[in-house]
Amino acid sequence: MHNTPSSVTVKDLSIRYGAVSVIDNLQLDIRQGEFIVLLGPSGCGKSTLLNAIAGLLEISDGEIWISGKNVTWAEPADRGIGMVFQSYALYPRMSVEGNMSFGLKMAGVPKAEIAERVAKASKLLHLDPLLQRKPSELSGGQRQRVAIGRALVRNVDVFLFDEPLSNLDAKLRNELRVEIKKLHQGLGNTMIYVTHDQIEALTLADRIAVMKGGVIQQLASPLEIYHKPANQFVAGFIGSPGMNFIEGQLSGGPGAWRFQADGESIDLAAYAFAQDPGANAPGGRKAVLGIRPEHIDVGPAPSGRHAARGKIDIVEPMGAETVLWTSFAGKPATIRVDGDNESGPGDEIDFHFDVGRASLFDAESGERL
Ligand SMILES: Nc1ncnc2c1ncn2[C@@H]1O[C@H](COP(=O)(O)OP(=O)(O)OP(=O)(O)O)[C@@H](O)[C@H]1O
Ligand SMILES: [Mg+2]
Image 1 (tube, rainbow, N blue to C red):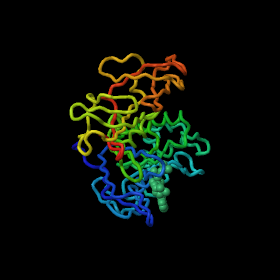
Image 2: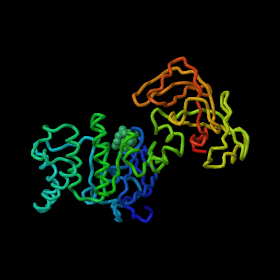
Image 3: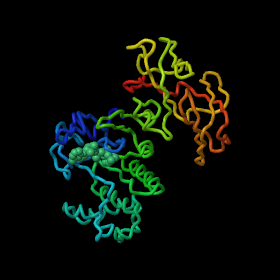
Image 4: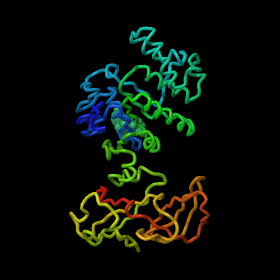
């Protein structure tokens, strides 16, 4: 991937509305053919960043480059992008075919070429049997496919998606998610995809940019973000049920660090520190230990794992798996077990985890230790 040229580059981007800064000095470099997902809670600036790349809003500072050209001052239509929004706004009186070809007609593309491009997009998106229907005669998922088709026919290098699936029900969303992934595998275009749905992000992205307050918190592959979250915010945002966080402090020293929390003393020998934990506050540095519910196992502990015991408060069966609510170091904690687990409320259980799979954060900055 490293020799692949840049497709979209955002340099020193700032966006302010009056005194309110929404994005401050943001950097992002996207490689050709990459599928990038912008993920974060409502209001974190995902759409703002996407619209800035599309040229739909005025930026306060910085530059946008697309396919090697500085497009900071270029009109949206001249940027070589295709965009799909959450509200797909199809022309109601035009057929599916009309909706897909309209933009090309307006741009003066020759008839034969329009027909060819519409036919290709229609085939990719399974719209062939629907080409003569009006939007009102389509299901939500079919309409969304037409909206994607309308962007596809533009033959551009970069596609921008802003929550394209959020108006659909769960089943359709899953189906179209797979279609979008197939589409990307087949076309190989650059895609920038905004969502607040972590499953969409994890399943689609080559790299995820997790955003909060207009700042990219971490830009990495889905697995890196899942296993090695850069800070406590990213750790808590990815995963369902969320990561268990235990507040405590570090004790010991280099080569013999331990994590101390209410009644638990956890050997950190298996933990790979991302930074020197003793750098600023030897000994009692306050920290937060994070363990994913799926990384805790029930039963007697094999050697090398931290063992604990707790009482089950609540059992949440979810079919394939069950979530057990217990407590660890005096705080509520969840454990994900197999769906055929028969534990019930009030049961005492032994559980254990591998410290090497846990995450440690500085209690004040939230940064990964
Ligand atoms: N024209 C504007 N004037 C002032 N503030 C704005 C304007 N447009 C957006 N904002 C603010 O910028 C921030 C980012 O908005 P944005 O639409 O990018 O969020 P988002 O991450 O896409 O959220 P969502 O998931 O809800 O769509 C929000 O706090 C919003 O209130
Ligand atoms: Mg948005």
